[in-house]
Structure formats: structure tokens, C-alpha cells
Image (tube, rainbow, N blue to C red; front, side, top):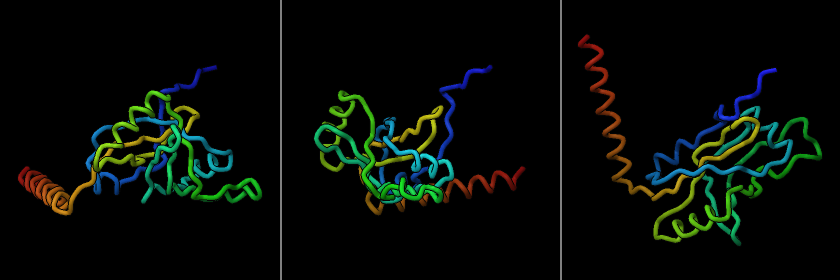
Length: 156
């Protein structure tokens, strides 16, 4: 019998708005504490990371605003879709994040949720907010790159 590859991962969802609204300085990986019906809902793609963020409370890391839809066959075992989800990291990593987040203008934002083997993991980004002119600049650069790509495609 072939052994499962633990390194394989399958992305469940990404927070695309995070990269638009923030500069991602550094990324971290954290496990997430979920109940069975929540995992079943994730396998069906019933999750939304929009407007979610992470907070450190009492030496523990929590993801707030992550919406996991109730599982249709879950009946009494379903949990509140917006309940705070505990993230699993080593104490030393959480203390490092505490120091980084305490700096002015930095926040922890969930970037994506994915399966790594049979486990659910969350990619966190240490982020600094973008100003409106930064967003316009990024959109202008993307449009210019698209125009260059079109011109090169038409040329050949």
C-alpha cells in the first residue's frame, strides 16, 4: 500500500483582497483547531476569509472573522460560523509574532486556507496597510504590464 505524501497540499481558499489592501512583509504557517462538521464544510469549499484578521490574546493566537458555512448534514453538531478559531503555533513563534505586531501599523491577516496531508493549515501574513495611492500605483503597473504583454503577443 502506498504511503500518503504529507507534503502535498490543496488550497481551499485565498484571501485575494489581503494582497490588494496590505503589503505582506512575512508569511507564517499555522494549524487551525476545527470541529468535524467544519472540516466537512471546508472540503465542500464553504469558507470565506474576507475581512478576517488574527489577534493574540493571553499568549494564544485566534483567527477572527473567518466564516465557515454550516455543514448541511451537521444538524446539532454545527458550530457558529463566525466563532473565533484557535490557531496552533509554537509558543516561541507566537511570542515573536506578538513583538512584530506590537510595532506600529502591523497586523496579522489570513492569506489562505489549505489542506496539508489530512490537516488544515492557514497561511498568515505579517502585513502593513497600503495607502490609496499605493493601490492606484499597483493597479497602474498591472495595467501597463498587461498592455505590454498584449503588444508582445500581437507582434509575434
